[in-house]
Image 1 (cartoon, rainbow, N blue to C red):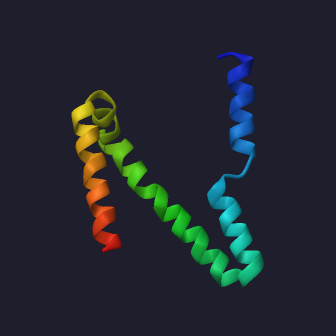
Image 2 (cartoon, rainbow, N blue to C red):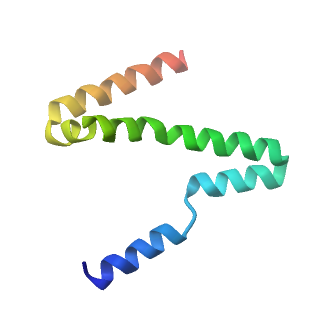
Length: 84
C-alpha cells in the first residue's frame, strides 16, 4: 500500500461525515435528546448498506446492470409512493 492510500485513509477517517455534522448541530441547536435521535437515525441509515454488503447483494448489484437498474426503479417507485 502506498503512502497516498494511507494519507487518503487518514483524511477520510479523521474528518466527520455529514451524519456526524448533522447529529452535532442538532444536539447543539435543539438539545441532547434531539442530537441522540439524530445520531440514532444516521446510524440506522447505514444498516441497509451493511446488510447488502454482508449478504453479497452489493456484489450482485455491481456485476449486474439489470439487477441494479431494477433495484433503482423499485426505489423510485417507493419514493413516489411515499410522496403520494
